[in-house]
Image (cartoon, one colour):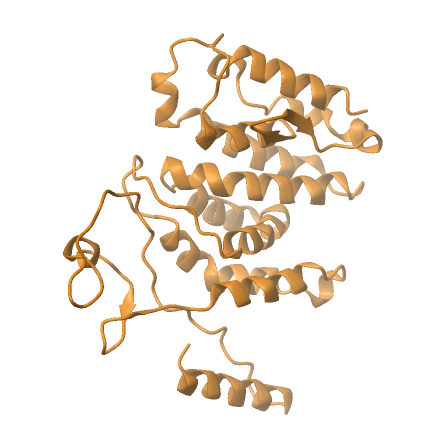
Length: 275
């Protein structure tokens, strides 16, 4: 954000505290997803010609990309996410302001086979935790709208963000005994259906193979209530005292037919014996 834009935002926030109209959430500059590509020859403006084509990113007058400081923004969201008083939370407003931008940044609208680089600034982790709150509490129409932004991402990006949502939703469901199972079941069903539709299943010809690709490992493990470690295997993140709430969700685990048998058996056994 430029110094001028920052100054205007500060003035608007101070005015709001003094009783004036609440300002809009600051808009982030458009930022293109980072595709996995081969070697590119940069231009004198600092970006290759094929990067510039159909690239929604904003450029300054010197040819540099204008970006939001998403690392700092993610830390702010992390502080907000720690608030336990729902009356003090702005999950709905945050998601409304940044869901389209976040989806675009993760490849929304790209071909389903598009391969993108992961973002390591913490934004996805923080934002999709907030989205999980909205998905668990929103009316049906908003639930469908927000979840469609996730399920319509390319396979590669979906496999990275879906575990963030599923784990955050599990925390909300399992830690609150008053939370009804209906929405948790609907969310998991949609995530499982999208997972089963991933193109990579077309190339798995041996369900008994002792491997599963890294792109899907975390996603599948999470849908089976597990963490996945490429060295130590799977480990359930459920604890014994929530065992009585797992039954409605077990039927929404990924179909056994699309999983390597050893992975399915290991993860399900750990989830079933967590209690």
